[in-house]
Structures are given as structure tokens and as C-alpha cells.
Length: 290
Image (tube, rainbow, N blue to C red; front, side, top):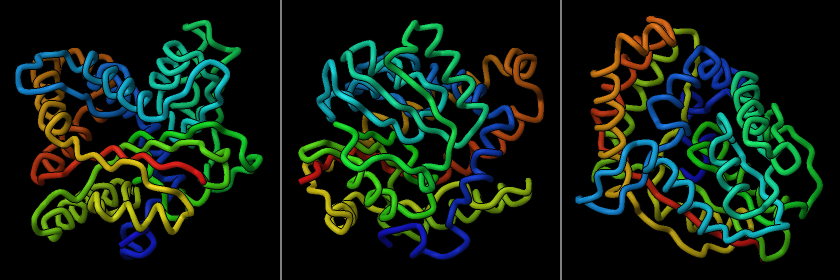
């Protein structure tokens, strides 16, 4: 269960088709619903009434704390989405960031965001399949993957690539959707149905089967990385994000349809109940290169 390739062909995301899914208007809609980024929000506790946008930015900041970079450091953002986390990281730490996405639409949106922020000298965006990209060994001080590792065909191969790219002592931080249920068959059923929905629209599996947080320790070690911290932050992220995105979709549906089109909004509405029907977990995983 340590890599997508080990859990069955039906659950191996195909990068080109994942990119197509996000190109289908979905990137801009998800960024709008999620407050600018394409990831969950982070709330400090039950009394925290932060907006989705504020909580999304907080998750980016939490990830920045985990990699601990500063001015002059070079960071690789694997799966940079529409560029909001990369811009935030560069602005708050002074680091230089290289963002990678295999979606041409996301690459364009991210580049536009970088240009608007005046960060063209410190943040660059490339459109490429990360697993096929040739980058120099030990060329980054840190790597982060925010909800992107599950879109890759093999978690272990991705982590071995990260190990190759990190300088000695460099850190990787991963935010990943997890199998958080007592019986993993429940999660499997939801992933099966999500795959069926994707296939009905000519897409393959969009995400690898979720794994449990504890499974990351041997996975990191097999990749040659040293685990530092595995934190379950489900209580700070999942339910609150779902509630706020559902509320926005309900309250502003007409405006969202005008902006993004009925087919895109309807597609997201068809996927949302599948996401809500199962108890996914969420973890932040940190490791270092020896």
C-alpha cells in the first residue's frame, strides 16, 4: 500500500488526464471556492471562525513553518496549482520558489499571479510532468507537496525524486488526504465511485488510494528520507473546509455559473457528495534528506 502502483491499476492517476480535469474550468472554480489556493484551509480550533480564504492562507503558512526556509533558500513547489502558495511563501520568507504543474491552465494562472505580485525574479512556474522532468541533484533547500502527491502515479517514486533533489539536510513537507476511517473499505468505496464519475467523463482515476498516516514512516524510509514529524490535522481542516465550500456553492451558485459555466459547476456538485460521504483524514508529513 506504499505507492499508488501497488494498489491496483484502477487507482493509478494518469498525469495527462489529471491535467485535463483541472483544465476543464475546474482550476478557477476550485480556487474561487477555496479562497485563492487549491488546498484545504486550517482552523486553530472550534471557536475559530476564519473565512475560507484566511484559513487557506494559514495552511500555507503552517507548511512554510514546517520547511523552515528563509531568504536565499531555493524551494520546489511540486504541484503548484494556481500559484497562491508559492507567491505567499516567497513574500513571507524571501525564498526563491520553482513551481511545477502539469496543467497548462494552472501554469498560466500561476504565472499571472506571480507577475501581479511583482515576483518574476523569485518565483518561476514550469508546465511539465514532474516524474519526467530532469532537474539537477541536490538543487533545492526544501520541497513541498500540498495535496499533490495523491495525483501522482507512484508515491514512492515521487519521494525518491524528492530525495534526489534535496540538498543534505533539506526538508520536505507534504500535505496529504489520508485514509482516516476505521475500515479502509469505506474509503475505497468512495474512491471507486469518484473514479467511476471521472471515467464517465473520459478521465481515469484522479487520485491514488489514500493511505494511513502511519504508512508514511516506512514509505519515507524506503525513499531514503528521515521522518521528522507526522501530524494528523484532520480536526483543523476537513470538516470546516467542506462546510465553507458547500455554503459558498449554495449561496452563490448563480454567480458561479455566470463566471465558470453550468457544466463546470455541475461537475463539482456531482463530485462533492462523494467527498462528503466518507471520513477522509488529513496529515502534514515532514522529513529531511540525510
